Every structure is written in structure tokens, then in C-alpha cells.
Image (tube, rainbow, N blue to C red; front, side, top):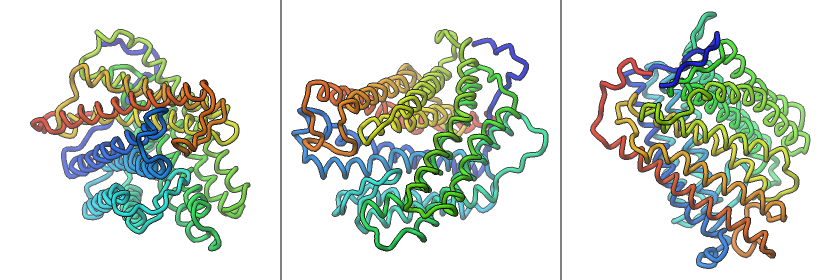
Length: 470
């Protein structure tokens, strides 16, 4: 076991998982998220094949690519992230309004099922809107409305039942503040979605309509994901025996900084028409500036805490997957952030940027899911496979991102597949080939996560392990 960092404010960040109805709710959200990743993995295989040189010729290209991309993105980002938020918010709430909590879960689950089935029952036009791409057909849109309704109920309950923090609080209180802040940013996102729906010009349709509809709320949701990632970073760092060199009050300040810029969102709606360039630019600026305020110091604190935890052989077996997920998360998120600085034009550098950022959040939540398994009454993830999985998934995604950046330098356009990519030279083909290879490795890493999770969740339950556990 590693020695604690010898700093005055090195503290343990963790929350106790209650052994009551909240744990049951958390288990339900965890299952929904895992099933969403399974569905997303099926579509991601088809998606990567549709953009990989030579292999792409075996598939029905453009339409197939776009349909697969829509469902893959919505399951792997929207449904997975909201499911993990539901798990953490359930742990952070009280036992009141349980019927509302169960209704939210079942609505989200029903919506996710419809989203997944839509491609097989006349999917409609695939519209590659930012943040929430859609299949413009009745089945998919009905699923999206069901899922949004469940999410709204989840946010409402979590907001009303959020724990009240006093003047004096410990590291656990700081984590609760971070989770409360993520609920607030989610509420702002829902407000933005509703505002856009009411204000979007009637003359718009297709991609222009959905782009404006989801732009404001989609930007606000990024603050929610960032806050959840920061909570996961602190929690995982303490879980592996490292000590974070941040006092609870400084950690609270970081969460507050990560939240503040989300309130630019309602100002943007009041100041500019939602279809204006000024509206879009202001929201983009708020997301870029607001996220970095907290992420850089928080990531540095995590790296300082991790520095003594250098020898894997000294870590308990259950801590090794957590360390792997934490290191991979920080690295991928940093790479995605650096790529974002150098984006120009509309090419595949843009998906390289958000793949890094989104995968950074995903890895943090994967690691936290590993940590919470025994605290939710399941077996702990064990074996070399559990430790290999985050590294393999992260390495594949890093190759995927490098390939996209490489190809973006040649001007390869985003959101196209097959012959529409117009790969002329050896450099462009090599870049997209690296992207395809990295994507396939990442798919294997994602599959391993599902296998590790299912192996633990389907093993004989161990309810005693969660008693008073952090």
C-alpha cells in the first residue's frame, strides 16, 4: 500500500453507500448504463468498419454509417452518462419520493429500448446534430421523448432531495457538493432544451432545426459530465490509497468554478436569438473557459497524489483497475483538451477532440463503477483482465484520436463514411487506417469492461460488503 502524500490538507474523498432503497435504485441505474454500453458496442463495430479502408467496401456505406453513428453516440454518451449520474444521484439523495425515482428509471429504460430498436423498424433520416444526433422517425423520437421525461423526473427529484451542507463539512461533504452541482447544471440544461424548443423558428427543419434545438442544452450538459468526472477522480484517488492534496473547501471551490459558467446559458438565451452566431459563440466560450478553470488544478492535484503510487505490485488487487482507469481518464481528457485548442475548420479533428474528452469522462465513470460494485452488493472486479481493460480501452481510443488528428491535417471531413470520405493519398488512408485499428482495439476494451462487470454482477451477491462502506 502506498504512503500518503505528506501535505497538510491531504484527505480521503469518499461517500458511504447506504444499504437501503437508494442502493437498489443505484443498482438499477448501473444496469441501465451497462446495457446501453452493450448496445452501443454492437453499433460501434459496424460504425468503425464503415470508415476503415478496404473493410468499408463490405458494408452499405453512407446511410448505414450515419444510422450506426446516431445510435452509437446516443447510447454511449447520453444514456450511459445519464445512467451513471442516476446511480450517483441516487446514492446522494434520501429515501423519499421513491415512486418518482422508480418512474424516472423505467421511463429512461423504456426510452433507451426504443432508441435501440428504431434502426430496425424504418429508422427515418439520420440527422447528425451536435450533442444529440437523431433518426427523424416516430419510433426514435418517441424513445427520445420518453428518455428525456425520465431524465427530467430524475433531475427534479435529485434537486429537491439534494443533501443540505452546513458550514463545516468533510471530504465526503465536498463530494456531495460536487454531485449537487452536477444536478444544478443538468437542470440548467433541461431549461435550455425547453427554451430552445419554444423559441426555435418554425421555418427550420431537418438538421438546422435539431442543431439549434440541442445546442444550448448540449453545451450545458458538458458541465454535468465534467463535474461527475471530477467527483470520480477524487473518489478514485482516495480509493487506491493515495491522498489528494486539496482541502475540502478548495475542492468545493473547484466544483463551484466548474459550475459557474453554466449560468452563462440562460444569459445567452436572453441576450441573443437562439439562431444567431453570437448565441452559439457565447455558449461555446462558456464551455471552453468554464471547464478549464477547475479541470487543470484538479488534474494536477490528482497527479501529485498518484506520484507515490508508482509500483503496481504494492497495490491491493482490487485497487489496480481503479488506478488504471484513473490514469487513463486523466491522460485521455488532457489529450482531448489539447486537440481542442488547435481545431480549425470542419474536419475529423473535431471528433478527435470530443472523443478524448468524452472518453476521459467514460473511463472515470468506468473506474468508479468498478469501485462501487462491492458497495452495491456485487462481487469486486478481479484478475488481470480488470486491470488491462482501462489501459486497452484508453490506448485504443488514443490511437483512434491520433488517426483522426492525422487525417484532419489532410482535411478529411467529419461525419462521413465510405467513399464520401474522399481518401486520396497514402497519408489520409494511413491516418484513417490507424483510426480504424484504434477504434477496434477500443471496442475490445469496451467489451472487456462489459465482461468484467457482468462477471462481477452475476456472481453470488455479497450484501455484507456494502455495510458502512465507502
